[in-house]
Image (cartoon, rainbow over all chains, first blue to last red; front, side, top):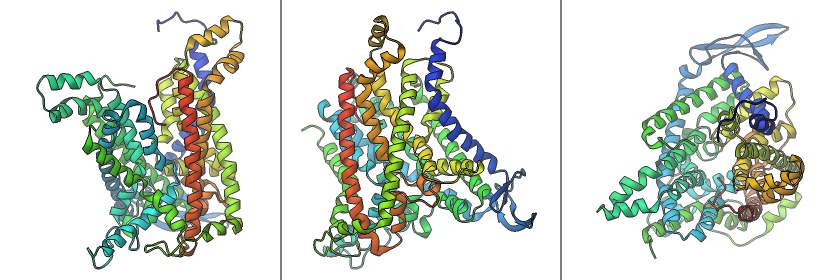
Length: 315
Length: 268
């Protein structure tokens, strides 16, 4: 659009646009931006039982903290606890969550790519949306019940163990499938599958098919054509898949609680514990902020490593 | 048939995707209290038990109230945002849209504790209303994703023609734009309702003493003897979701065909 001389603000396109978006934007600012800012602020404050004492401190992150209790109007020290980065349990859970997210992302995106490739390159155009619909349906059905059913599938009385026992391939049920990181990764890879397939599919659809023919005409093998033409052009989709799977998985609560067992617990379980049972909001906030910061750092590093694929693809 | 290997792999992958959903009715009709193989005969008793559980009915009522409210509010907010982003250029467009779409990638638990902190900070008691506030936040980005496709394929000259024929912006919207994007709106209502009905984390943190259907289901998982009933409930919910989604998909496609756009497929 040509730049017009600046007229009065009201009645201009900018004003109409801002006015139009204002209900949604105000909602997001009040109920999303402000709350997020608030947990960052809370993570620097002091825990008083059932209240927050607005006293700035860093000990929710490093060092040792005291929580206070109101005894006849006087704040008295009640408990000491360790900050997130000084607490071995919190550190273990954060690193484990990061590891699980990375594993889930790698597994999900690698398994999803051929599916997106098949639907984009081999399915006839009229049937593509049907295939995508089939792929997305499981995602929309009750998440809790799907996770619970993975517990059944991987459990000792599940179809895998029952089948192997009946076939005589094993004498005793396999127990290493459930209540550890394996089950968490499998369940999350299942839950996030459509999120990985769709962005890759969209970027594969955008590839001009004549580029591939050109590659083949110039004597490249099918594999080299894929490696040197298709894959680099599909990278923006792969990158969005990676981020859209990686960022939410670190905060997953249901899967580690139902199929994780004691060695599969993740950071969300500790956040929940601090918010609901221990009622220590500052520590819970510090945990939430720390894990988000960790995720953001890894995501930015990943984006930086792949920056050459994103040039000229600004959306 | 081209792509034989890929086809085989994709079918295998679909089996992986559908495995839990296929097992669900098998165990819901299985005549045993433990959810395990071998199966023990056919029964509809678990479905019968759904009728005499008042706690379940209460949770269902709550979920329906929340689902309908969240669907209507988030679709309205979605209409404003997708109309603004597809029709106008305005300052701070990218950061504002980024903020609005943020819940799509944020872990739900972060959104939930952040909202919880603010609500308790301003002294608002937890209730169904606070769950609705949270669900609207989660549902709006999905609504925008669906509606943007409908608004973007809209031909702007239709609207200009309406102005030239003497319509006001409001009547032009009602008479010209609304009928064209209506299928997208219906699709958005159905999808956001489905998301809200299934959303657990927000409700878990923000419902206070109330129960929603997923919170009730999560609670029942602690009692192994109640699990078959939950699987019966799950079977009904999955059928309901598939029906809602198929309807939504039908309207979404019709909407795109109506405005003359090209189907890019998928909701996301």
